[in-house]
Length: 140
Image (cartoon, rainbow, N blue to C red; front, side):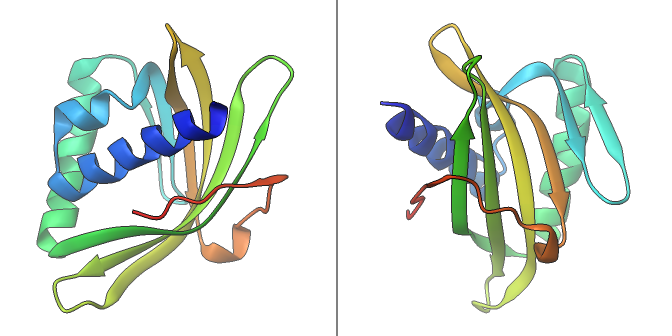
């Protein structure tokens, strides 16, 4: 059941990013949440800060002509308190079918009202990818 729920969460997440859909992306997160990159930490406390940050992210995706977002490797651990850590390596593909960005992202996920939600994402170079205990197949 956990694996199915995680697959659904990330299927929805990928669709939200590919469609640049704020409401669908917001449905994947619990606020407050944090987004970490090597350049910045964004602390999103409400819908307004979430929308501002994701409008910026989606603008970048649109300018890059993003056609597909592909999870290339994924694995997870479930902790005793019920939270889940997931590490996913991503490839972002443009309309020329070329990978224009690849990186790893480490997600911290909690269950809120029977649904799993992202509370933290740390994105880094692929060299920082972590293989966790349980493989997760996220093929679309």
